Length: 249
Image (cartoon, rainbow, N blue to C red; front, side, top):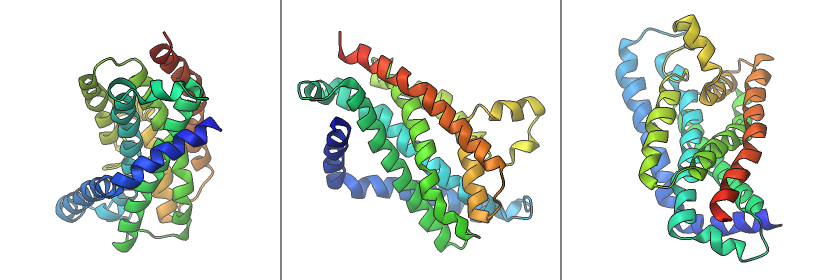
């Protein structure tokens, strides 16, 4: 299949740059955990019976996965599209735009899951994982990985300048991250803000990762996963349509 060939191509590149990729996604969340958990956390009272470090640690898994997928399908996809003309070269072979989009999304989802697992290992080593349910987090990360890959590649499909990704990061990713429940409970915010949180994909990812890490399994987690799947289903045809306009004039 064309999708698997494109994924294999991306993996061949990744094998040459994996160390620098993983170190970036390992060190930055570790710094957040140290500064916020051991630094700020000493001045913050327990949240829902959890120390501040215990509270934010699972959210770091979700946020690391989000950033990995988002950066891959923004800067990574744009460079392959605009500068390297990799996508155009692929179209000269037996692949379609659908294959290219799906291959990019599959690769970004793989990186999302991988980097989420790296942080999961870190917080486990720090003693912040309380349940064996955490073993299912890598499987769950496939869902938000698809969601954030699609959101990013849709934006890439309408962007003509690499500098415009600053808008996506500053006006979407950063607010989504800060108001996702990673650093404080959403129920501490005004009612209207709690409603808006349900439209924030990373909020749903954080809720599931935290519940699994702590062993708080409940039917509501299916709702969070369902929201992410719904976003994925809606965005997939849009991503293909936007990239088709960019690649086939």
